[in-house]
Length: 328
Image: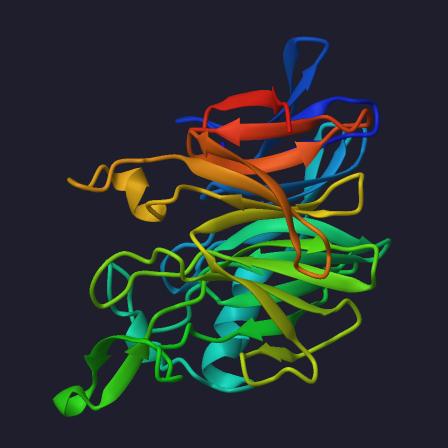
């Protein structure tokens, strides 16, 4: 399981990736039923309800952006709305648009090939015709229309060193002449009632150590296009809530406040059972939209996604396999 989303009838949609099938399941009145099966070569990752039995769904990317699509699920059927992988292959915005901060040769690490990489993750609805998607490997927030047009709304930039330079993870090219930066890894996007969108960032692997207290939340006008999320670009972007760790979801609650989910305070490394880095607990925090902290719930077991039902209850997905209501 990667995501959950509440429908207007009070049911909870869950993206489930089994060994033999990828499905959207619905929890309602204590019962679990299959809403739709997705014919995909990669995992179902993001889900955004647009009504009872209806949702937009993303599927994950694979090496060199060979997979990753946006689907609309309705009445038990799943229809491809947009080919997100094709957009990445043809454009690769973090390499060729805006700041152009990433060299494609820098993708040849961790089992991947040099070239375009994508991984569509969480998804949300901006308006009747536009869907927003966090592309984790593309380091972008994409938007897609219901007619299948895809473009990028924002490119995230790498985290900075204490001296104000992009953090370098490794070097490649002839004589190690190309700097390969730590990747920002957007995981989630939410639309606020204030005319802004909020972007959650995970932060990729560092050259040394663990990416603790490196994640950021970005805030930009919902009508922005081709924006650059860079700490120097404060005319368009407001960046705040520094020192977070492995942000995996952001949601606007029924109270109009921002809820931020941190996977684990030991970072996403905790998923891999690394000696000395066991999971020590994830956190869900609530903030006012100006960035002021309100309250939090801590010591959660790898919380991966949240949603709010029609009664205002907060549902949380933990350990990739358990969905429960959380008293906040």
